[in-house]
Image 1 (cartoon, rainbow, N blue to C red):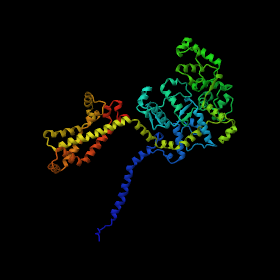
Image 2: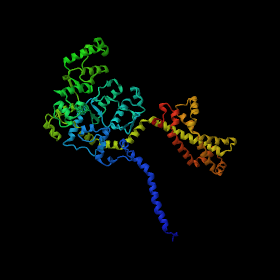
Image 3: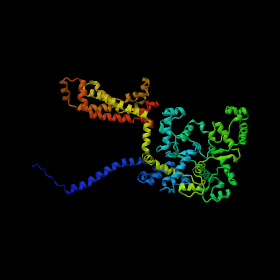
Length: 597
């Protein structure tokens, strides 16, 4: 029969102690996890959480499909500080002081909204670069007083722009050489500023960087990621900013109209009759971007164009010097986008301001939409049957931005969901992969330094432990004295020595001055001193030499301590910033901490 040990039941006081200590220990253990849980939760947040001062991010979109769609819309529309533009596109009457994330839901779509969305995407695909903004850019920026932008993540159209550059130029060095830019890596590439519809811009094609971006907008950006610049919206905003038409009652009084709401106000394609025509002409000539103006070219207008050029440049010879061809044969471009130089654009823009308004026609996104409707449906009845909603006129069907967004979400929901959830992680991964040179430099430095630190300090510690070196034994004090001074204190003499030996901007400049460490030597010597001398004596009797004693006796026993030294050396070299910044000033020698800085 097995021997049974006596078991004593815990007393009352012991139970009280256990009931108190165990929950307290578990509570303290959970408290230790709180910073980690907070860090993990914040990694799924975005800049909106920072703007609103949240200690914990708003993660409702992770478990609510409705909130995820609202979050998706907020991402697409760049967290507009004002809801005006979103209200115009969606017909939402929301307070201008809230953001899109403040919406609990968006209005439902009626009828066959997919048909309207598909036709809208077809219309967008026909628009030139000057008529669109890239959607889902992910420009979650805090624009601070210092002029620096804090980006939370890079969005999908931003990613497509950088992929476009990678395919065409293969390296950031080639991009910088081509466009005279100074980007450190592809994640740092910014989108060029392009003219707005309400600006009178300069010549984009004269800027090679902006011209490359316009090629990307026309050829590399999917239709679903293009936000059209709607002429009706910009027209309404302009009217509301003018003293004489600041409210709808003044507009109706000026134009002789009876509009019930601002959404009924439309930008006419050609000059309208009456007092509205005078306001329209003032807007087109003074505020509207030339990229949205189309000329109705006729022989009399072409004659006026040639006379304008002669008057502007003084003579036929003056025109020849500017255009490099016979001045009498410069064709009149229909659109500003057709101009071939900055000078031609400036002349065309100045000429447009002088021609009669009857020769002006607006090429807006709504015009492309109306053309698509007329080409697809011959009558309003056919359009109503296809869309599943009443259609009074093909010229008054609203731009289907909400339908296009919902269709894009439906077709790419998984990709967008993953982008919204893991946007911060993807940005970090993008930074890491595009900083491959710095990662390789860091890995090379860390590996080489770790090996040398273990080998050199281990060998020195073994010698100081095994042999009585007399006065040389005091070298341990020297090693410990070196450990008392940080590397920065010896930076200047080490820098001068490395420069004299030609080792600056090499990996040896990082490794050699820091490979010997007094603390590592002292730590390993203390361990070697603890090894019994009988081990060495027995190995000596078996015929082992000193190298054999070191390699087969001391090193196997010291593996734990050598691992500690190697770990310390790796962590120091991996995170080293100041010394790497001092001696690795060349771009191709930067380590990861230097690149991040």
